[in-house]
Picture (cartoon, helix red, strand yellow):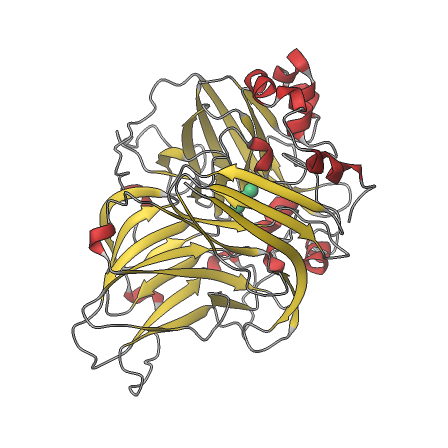
Length: 500
Ligand code: C2O
């Protein structure tokens, strides 16, 4: 294992990724798109951040990384740290004991769609599939907005938008561009690591003329599964192997197609596809893409984790989150779990847990707006999520991957009983719940920390669709010496007066 250091100034840059609108974006070291992080299992990763944005605070979250023993390095502002004010430095320092496909993004409310997002790959020296491909490729999918987030968020969360209609993206991107071609070598086998780093739109994804073999989702190896077309919500990842043809007679499109069902209105000018090409012969034409309905859907519940980890079937602690969207006194539309819309506290919830001695096991000390659940060390936790909303939502838990036990096609309250529960359920860190449907998720509370559970649609992070898992707070206090284990630069971020 090595120590891998990234020195990152967070800076404004200019970009025009869909070649229609030039705008300010948030980059790293004056570059956009931000660079991929590539490390190896067991590495100590150090990210020295200097916030040079001048007018915005920031933070970084390493999505899917468990942060075992270092929950204060997880990144969400208001949960595990204060936002990093302009002009300040802040160091993330953690060890990666996982493998596979992840990503990093800002975790200051509503910021990452302005550009601060990129792939994070953790190489596995013992990769069980390493003999099954010759080369790997990282492919991000994303939606893209011409307007900047602070402005979009302001109109989204206002009395002029009482229904909570989410801003519709202007376009879709692959590797943050619309001009992606990929040179194919006949007979070679490629593993594509596909990551949706978007804000809002899940994407249907397919390769024309090549079928995919799924071998990993969200960092978990799966038994190989053939798929024609996958559905990738924001924050989800799939590694798929494709085999190149043995001849160069034609080129093939590969397509990301945004799921329009999430859009309240679909502007006539919107091209919800982004197309790239597998190029075997540059002098041949690049064929037009086919349509999404030509390809068969793949259900991620069919996947089997390669480690065959069994269903967690002795539940110690079960709770229900009823979610809904509704208006508050200001006329804007908010999102609620059990009638509470999340508001990030000024004092990070982790710091409260560390400094409140035995009171830390009482959820009330985390305030009325954090949807805090206190979990006991080692217990098996079940979350029953009822989506009383007509939209699809991808739910993510920090610090863990969870098992999905059942997911209804639709209709909340009308679930589970008649479904067969898989004995080796799929495990990942982001699962889709269907419109007016629900999902039952389980995990073991074996990772002391304070972890958010939230919808990964960035609009709903802003409108409050978040709960807080305070996991094993007493153990956490000894782990981080009641707060003395947290480095000084982390506390310094809190000293600034109301950072932007
Ligand atoms: Cu991608 Cu709260 O996370």
